[in-house]
Image (cartoon, rainbow, N blue to C red; front, top):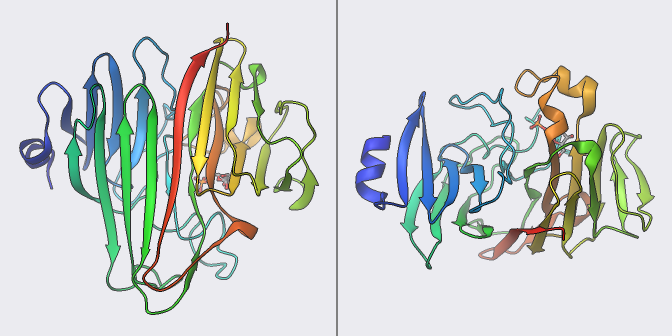
Length: 301
Ligand code: TA6
């Protein structure tokens, strides 16, 4: 549906509009000083900035916005497998919904100062030869003084389905060298930059000093990004998400990514919430699984 038609059907005067970006359509939220953006392709949030705050979500200045291309940044939705498909080496990385068309089902000013969008994607027929299961997913995003997102997956098959999923969130930071991550102390992680070895996180705040690609397992609690330069904490609460993934490509990998580049990588850190590896979801026929995350920002006094 075109931006014009979406605006006519779902637009909310003074709160929600729709604009074309090349061949894509972006929802633009602006309410009481808060701003947000979401691309309908992939249902990808690309911007969220609470009133009086710096942007919280990072989107690469070199991101490519084109049909079938995943956004470098924002909150890509990873489903139904995380990273390389462990069972199908030929499958594309991170599943097949993050650059697929999602349908906007609902848009409302749910509560004062908040705008909620609900989008869906449904596979009555197999969407991928690598995971040919019938399913429906509904993604609900509430832009407000906090940012809440929920991914609900419904099993439309007559048998149990297994899948991985993640909200692959890129957070904006002052400088990767000035941030630390807390909330993961004592947990086990798969270190993907060290032969996928399983290691235990010590109790010190996590400070990255090089490429990091870690899948933390059995981490149902919140994680916090402490930014000493911008004097703020980004608090990431989660529900239905047993895994937390921490990633930064660092110099060499970033320079090789044309949609990131040699400079922008120092201004981001991915702290993703999902269910990956050992935390893969097994969903009974007819069942529904919900993965939620809520992001809030507060000042470091
Ligand atoms: O979440 C971390 C990760 O799995 C890394 O291994 C890296 O591949 C990153 O995702 C980005 O993946 P993408 O397919 O978006 O380039």
